[in-house]
Image 1 (cartoon, rainbow, N blue to C red):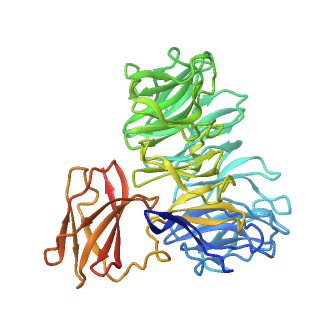
Image 2: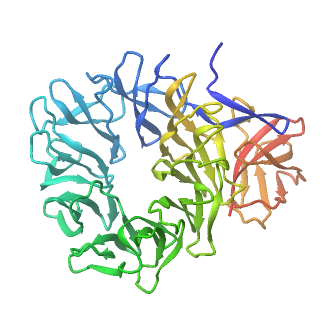
Image 3: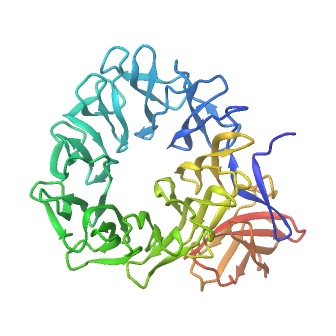
Length: 536
């Protein structure tokens, strides 16, 4: 039996393609374990292990036939698992373990066999890379080690353009850009500091100490608001504050003292519509806090578990004007919550697993926001760990697809959104193992023969819930009916069209804010168009 790369869902009396499908079964009979997804121009690149046991870089546009091996490195199955970074929109920068050089820096232009080692900083088999994975689009930054003193380097993809910027740097956080400069939290001299660089030695400087020693991780906690960089900083007396910087020593100063209202390692600084949210703790429990960047504009929003747990809030992400976060309280356990920054506007968004906890906690590092929707990972007893989505409403929060059928967990991860309103990720199924997948709701070619040579114009799009929308076309077709579907394939409304020459007006039903599909039929009942509609 031939494998189908699409899953189908029977709803409303007929078959619709589900939005997620396998990109390619790279390792027949096993798992390619794809990782390090990155986009360059119109293609996505990732690492995968083929049937011969070699782990190489692959490239894809989302179809199986276009998914091809890019590198031919002399490596092993566990020798290459580097993040893939893009600079100048034309070079892939990565590191790879090869004999006899060890872990070294490589580049590729995306074509097969174009990989070239950039430089060997530490000649021999020990390798040169201690930490890798930050890029500002112009340079890639990494920590050089392997027998050398750990130091911050940058490269433009050439040996001459690989420079040592600062010695004694042992690790760093994800970078944030402001005014043409890259900012990191770095390990330096036993503490965590804020470092600024423009990619030159002269333009690299330590600005201020952020956190004292005995820190096991470097939380990112760097947010740009109104032309300044905000961050959470620990003082020498163990108190905390919200600080901002304009990139100069004189312009680095505290804006909000956090003693009170909350002390004890505040974290997860998140920007939502010109407001800053973070998690604080006063010793009695976790608190959600909100600020406009001033002392008077800073307040505690709510306590999720006032009984005393310090893990009542775990992670959070912005969606439009709201904060979505993982919260725990005595009644629901860990579930999905939402806040508009007020006590009354903070509540349970969805009890995803009514018979228990939907997850020990949601982690939004495996999440993407796209078209006013948040895609995230949740766990239930019936379906295991699968891909979910929310538009910020309870009815708009549901599982996207049961990729690994039943209680089996697909374990989606490594989500990467591209420029075509879709995203790539890795997922497990019992049939194919762990392979690359793509969320592509507009690709219904295997379920509905949409005529791609018949483009329609839908306007205004986005639209408000009160507006009419208009459909126009240039070809000589006769659209007769339109169905409004959600991304689960459910038909929400069906309307006959009143056609006036090559145009028609559609009176939308009352639709919640979100993204929908308009399925267009001709007078013979054939599908001749599928358009995406965004309702604001």
